[in-house]
Every structure is written in C-alpha cells, then in structure tokens.
Image (cartoon, rainbow, N blue to C red):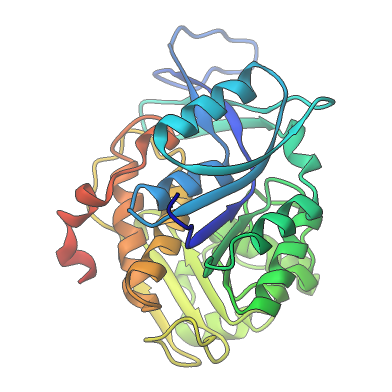
Amino acid sequence: MIKPRIAVIGSFVQDLAFRVSAFPAPGETRIGTFFTGPGGKGSNQAVAAHRQGVPTIFVGAIGNDIFGASYRDWSEQEGLATALLVLDGASTGAASIVVNDQAENSIVVALGANDALSPEHVTSTLSAHPEISVLLLQAESSLKSAEEALHYARTQGLFSIFNPAPINPDISPELVAFADCITPNETECAFLLEKFTGQPCPTGVALLSDDELRTACEHLPCSTILITVGSQGSILYQRRVAPGAVRSITQGEVLRIPSMPATPVDTTGAGDAFNGGLAAGIVKFQGDLIQAVRYATVVAGLSTERSGTAAAMPSAEEVARFSQFYS
C-alpha cells in the first residue's frame, strides 16, 4: 500500500441531490431529477486530493448501515485509503441538496455518526502514518477530534489546514490558533471575526483594501488566512511568519488570486475541491504556497463544470491541461 502524505479528517454524508429549474417556494412541490452518491466535506476533500495523484487517507465515522456499507465499497473502488470508525449506535450522515438552473444550491445536512468521531481514533490513525506531512480538517464533524488532531499536527511538525465550514458556533479561538492555515469563505470569515471580536464585520471581504484586511484579520489567531471569494477567486494573507513547511510568501503580504474561467453547472462541493487541491498542491510543489493556491483554483473551477460533489472532482490529468494558470 502506498503510504499517505495527506490525512483528511472529517465528515462523510450520503448526498441525496435534486436538480430543479428553480427552488420550490414554501409549500410548493417541484418536479426534478435525482442523484445520490458520496459526499460530506471531509470525504469530498479527500477525494479531491487523492485524484491529484497524492497519496491520501480519509479519517471519519460512519454508521453500520446501508449508506456506510455503500461508502466503503465506493472508496475501495476509488482507490482512496480510509480509516473509518464504524458505529452501531449511529446512522451514517446524509445530506439533502437542491440545485437550480443557476448552479446555486440549498443544503440540509444530518451529521449522524460524524458527531461521534473520537479523538482516540483520529490520533491513533495519525500516529500509525508518520509519513503524513499535511493535515486537512473541517467543522462538519467532532470539533473535539479536530482540536486534538490540530494539536497533534503542531507537535509533530505537520502543516495543518482548517476549513471552518460549515459555520459552527462552537469553533473557538483556541482551535483556530492550532491551525497553520484557515480557509473560510467570505461568510465564514465574517462569522469568525464577529465571534472573536463581538463586533459585526463586513461580509464583503473582497472589497476591503489590503490594509483594512490586515487590520480585520489580526483577530484570527493563525499564521495563514486564505479566504475564498467565489467567482472573484481568493485572498491570501500571511499574518505571521509562515511555518517551515511552506514558502513563497512573506509576513504581512496580501495576494489576490483570480478564479479560473469556468462555465458552472453545479457549484456544490467547489470549496471542498479547493481545499483538497490546496493540500495536494502543497505536497506536489514542495510547500510553494502560492503555486498550491493557484493549483487549488483550477481544481475548484473544473469541479463546478460537473454535477455532484465527490463525482465532480477532476483528475490530475485534467488539471494539468490548465498548467499555465499555476506554473
């Protein structure tokens, strides 16, 4: 078995997706088409990284039910290494996703077994794979396990990325401080700033000047802040000296990286594609953070041109066709 370089810790949910011309109004029923497949932020990000040719292991929790069994079969066919905690007393997570003709989505998630992902399972898996160099987490499973994993990464010198999605009111400054890099979108960034300062913050982060951005982000206690801003791309701010695992950016630097031109069909999972692509890029480009962000931008852009989440993640060969964007 190939030894993993990336560990993704987080959620798996079974996607139950519906495509309609327009979202139904309250009390309205619309006829659409249906798709089901693997989803969840953790699993999606692991698939995105794995498909870039970087050995990846997904660490999560599932129920002992039909959705869990289906995922184990699917991940084996995909060739994705997993370390799954199988729980008899909990159901596998599930998500209802509705996508309209504008490629917008509306999602409801039942986390199920993801909430019971234990710190012991996470740390025992990480310690069994000392070759791991990048750790990627989200806020869609047990935050206690996430904090334990981030603490482990700090003590072992792993580069850690925390994607604070979805918005979770239990995210603490202490958890964020353990991460080397956080990757919120505009809404999540505004939520964190307001939670940590007690003051309302603008959601239009992309409209802030570089100096205004530096001032606002002083309240986010981590080294690297990477904010995704949809069709406008992303904003990278190096708040403190970068950890030794990454390079190419200096303290205080703000970079605005444009999105890749794409024709979106379904934007569900684009953030997951970006995060998985970022982790893979850090490994592929030996810690060149700017090149990794550009690479992630291509991975995310291509994912929007297909329906679904995990199924929409592009391969390394597809991404390589746009090497002019990240080389």
